[in-house]
Length: 133
Image (cartoon, rainbow, N blue to C red; front, side, top):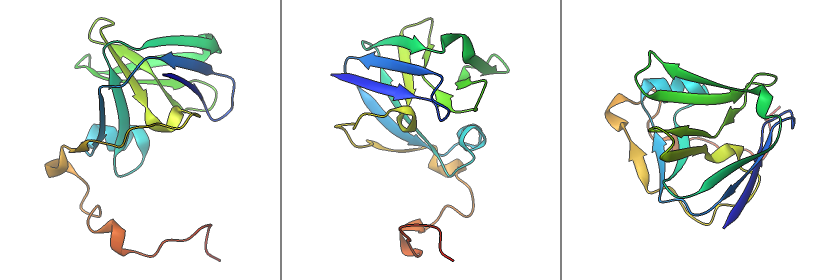
């Protein structure tokens, strides 16, 4: 498979060629800080290849305390972007950074014991197609 992706401002564009082995929604406090949301949604591959099409010079990578919690982002708009981890052996792709459809669904929620106190029964609250007035 070949996937295309980009940042919000469009200055960084990339392709991922290959398959994803895992897709998890992580609720740990670090992923919540990274995304500003209830969880991160990341795809993982040990075989796919990442190719930067444009804007690679705008990509920065942050490794929290050198402990392996790694986030890459566009320095212009702040969007989360793919990165290589484990000495280049693991490609981590934020699902929201892809412009292509993803043929797999998340396999599960991880670190749920550390999720935010407001992250309960979210399927029960009202849903709107646009910002309610």
